[in-house]
Length: 191
Image (cartoon, rainbow, N blue to C red; front, top):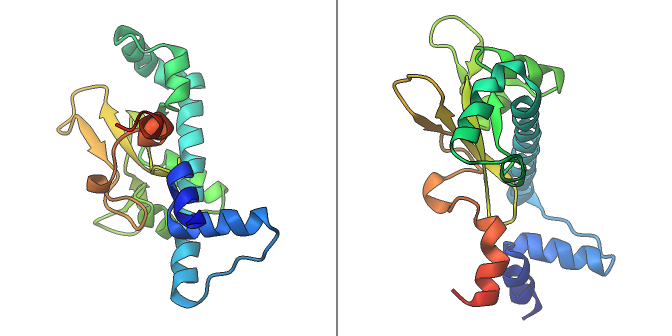
């Protein structure tokens, strides 16, 4: 049917396909009750992740502190065009750089925790950045929404790679990195 067609063509879930079709024919699209609340939370977390992906990408391009990350990419043969296509980024090596940036953007620390970007301090009050001093890889769902991040350490760390913890929008086992960039080609080639 038309919903299945749009879902396959644009790699959308049913609700996203229904919304797209409703907009196309100028119908109002509403979801109700619990689904609306979950949808609203999901949309907020996706908005926050998209904003943070832009910040990380900007930091990789412009921050003096990211010079080591840029040099690492160059050594690995990753040029600027590839870094741009995959929106690679850099998380500043500070405990509160993202905490402060989110606060200025009117994102609460609790929303930052729910998005998997911040953690609560064990002792006392407050929050800290989950990713610090890492080369950042945004992780997208098949529709191209940033749902989480992978961060690679650039110096000796106990964990070379750290991912976003499970969140309402991110489940590592359900995703294939950059599938959103390859989905149309995969569909066109049938494999």
